[in-house]
Length: 256
Image (cartoon, rainbow, N blue to C red; front, side, top):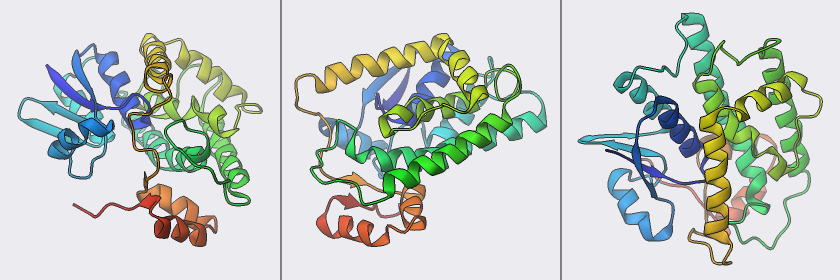
């Protein structure tokens, strides 16, 4: 059986869990961001990132690489449409989800997500900047959607990559109001059995992990990478970010 180094709340792990469910592939899950699982995660990914998929002797890190591996390993049902043009569209929206959407939702959620133990307030204007940029992304998604259906005709990796971020927008004070096709798309995606299972898993895990008050995860330090750093710097928060680094709250991993 496949083993997924997982986390209930990681949007990238959620993407992979839904992809596995879409294909009907059984797997064993390890909540690898829990502090007591850190060494096992480091053994398969020195960057300590989830998800990581282990299939016998094959180890695949990075959610997009895992999705591509699953399509090669278990071709039906596919995660990409048959048309080359639609395949390119699905990959593009997966990339937008993994970079732009993720960066903003992550950076705004530091003051609202239950794993974090922050007592400070966000720097002035950061939340407004994030909601502004999320609105731009949602407008682009609304434009990309047709009158009915999913982004690329049928369900594709685009839906599975985008939905974890879209489902987290309320956490950062953003809404789908004003984007009617995204609202319809969101309803249609939420009706999918694999998405309903994902949402139930997230809800159940939130209760199990946090109801007692003690979190199994790192509460103070936040690991910053790539697009998440780029977004705060591009919006003028370099001084704030350097303060985070100096305080030890922000950690930037070394390249492997």
